Image (cartoon, rainbow, N blue to C red):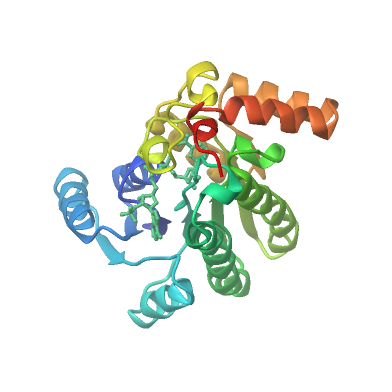
Length: 266
Ligand SMILES: NC(=O)c1ccc[n+]([C@@H]2O[C@H](COP(=O)([O-])OP(=O)(O)OC[C@H]3O[C@@H](n4cnc5c(N)ncnc54)[C@H](OP(=O)(O)O)[C@@H]3O)[C@@H](O)[C@H]2O)c1
């Protein structure tokens, strides 16, 4: 039976690759991102290539209440969402005091609050109907605190924590929750987050967005609670559990270093 998937951050990178996977399976895809022009092109491309049904909502999910509005618009259009992929997110590779506070706030609104709202509203509907699958995109950044990307790491630790908890709660109602933790991945993230020249991108190996999405899709369908993508990420997840937190923080500081942060003196 044809299912419907809602994907946030579907205009590029990992989210766009998720959209292609579901479109190829013949599912209905609801795309969400800010850039309307890109969404128009992607909707057209998916429809022509896969002959499935696609629609989009151009929304800035970092604006307070935008995620609740999205839920209201989708449900009042009579759409039922079977799969929810909370993928939209961004980081900022600067010392805490060097970034605008506004950027920190938008990051928390998008990476944390919008994800929480969508899990809450769609999760409630899914739990009431006794079926559905949710996938939340966290990161290798979820495993420790991260100097030079302190807020981003904190948001991803939140995503990991709430996903594991909701997997237990929603699991009782027949709804699975999967948390996907990728490492450095080819997408616009490196540029948007000023992170592309970091040691993490240089030394950890960069995955293809299509491979990350494929692995996430499989984990979601198998109803796995947690999926680390790539050997290096798995190794890091294992090692961070064994080593003291302050070592993990120092390691993250080295990985996040682009040298550029140190050129600015406050
Ligand atoms: N790439 C990596 O190295 C990496 C590693 C670990 C985890 N991740 C996580 O993977 C997820 C996807 O990132 P990506 O790597 O695919 O990066 P990306 O190519 O920059 O994609 C981010 C997506 O989120 C959308 N977005 C950004 N701000 C938004 C907002 N305020 N409201 C609605 N949509 C918004 C973007 O579209 P618009 O600009 O059109 O809004 C875009 O579609 C993120 O959660 C990221 O934290 C990435």
